[in-house]
Length: 95
Image 1 (cartoon, rainbow, N blue to C red):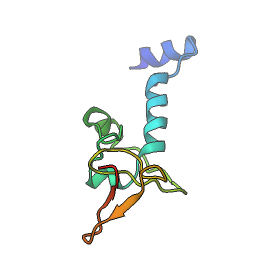
Image 2: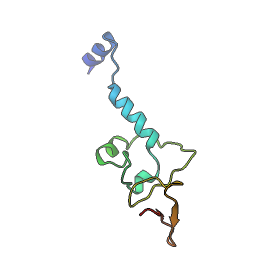
Image 3: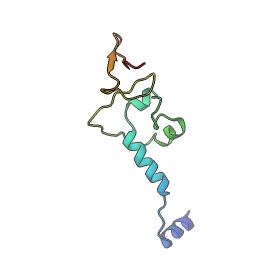
Image 4: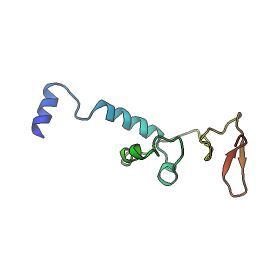
């Protein structure tokens, strides 16, 4: 271990790979508290191999919410308006 640290410092290399740093930064920006309980179809943080990487990362702070259709995985916006059922679930009219 000491040899690797000396090798990294002599060659001015970071101890963690730049890919790991970039991946951690991207997953932190996308991770929400919803990712722990419910898996969303198109969420990269909910994808099983990346979920294990993001376990120890902090949650993102989102000021603007985005509603995602649980069935089709698309964003609910003015092109696909929200339909709320009596049980509180939100779906798009296009489904």
